[in-house]
Amino acid sequence: MTRIGMDLNSFILEQERLYPNATGSLSRALVAIESATKVIASHVRMAGLADILGMAGKKNIQGEEVKKLDELSNNLLIQYLSQSGEFFALASEELDEPIFPEEGKDAKYVIAFDPLDGSSNIDVNISIGTIFSIHRRVNSDVSDFLQEGYKQVAAGYVIYGSSTMLVLSTGNGVNGFTLDPAVGMYLLSHPNMKIPEKGKIYSINESNDKKWIDAGLKEYIESLKDEGYTSRYIGSMVADVHRTLIKGGIFAYPADVKNKNGKLRLLYEASPMAFLTVQAGGMATTGKEDILNIKPTDIHQRVPVFLGGKYEMEKLKSMLKNG
Image (cartoon, rainbow, N blue to C red; front, side):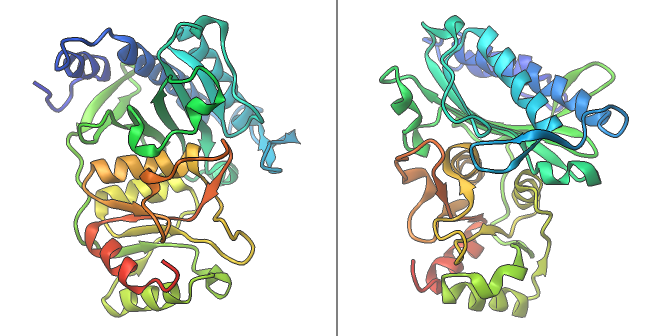
């Protein structure tokens, strides 16, 4: 049975025993993610001391400047995930096209990941993170990444903050593991995470309110204020969603006149975070449809994102005018 303090590897093996036909492939895949993120965490901790801050002098597929720690994290994930032999293909937010590693030619899974979410906060020592999403290999080509979010076999994130924490779901609830740097192990610290049905916090960049496309959204935010909600917005999705999962409320990154299709990426950010939120008892929508029901058309597709507790999300759906 799972218990507080159980290490991640033991937890993964315990979960595997629940499925008599399991081959161990997913377990080994998750261990590869664990190993890569522990190395990334060690580099994040010394970011202020080593020459890994600042820009790498290039732009990613999104046209954004790539920071040195972004590039390092991306390379580490590619290395560990490829060498594991458990992934037929890898899609990174930082790369134009997926990678098909030779070691994974017979693998069962594909993985999409954001190697370092919130990297604009690196230089000011605010929490950042890694997000990942795993699907089964179906067609053995790029279309394997164009599956609906509800078909994910696992999703999670690692938040590098005052402590390093891995939050994971394989479709049977959500569990959080905190990295003990003394022994180099993720230990179960937040079993069976559940988002409160009603919280007290809303998380949105309110400075963009004049640009929001849906007129009902501003009314919605004002109604939350009237109920006594407070605003908390970090600008790092991993950090904002992590707080929302634990304390409840709502996280939102809506469409606006500049980003009419939203700004967050479906594969690398919206879908895995929606999966975790729903597994924790919450809801996730674009404002028009459930995020987990969207069939992607492009690996870099963007969508509006609203996720949170049931009370806030039901209220949102009733007030949006374009939903």
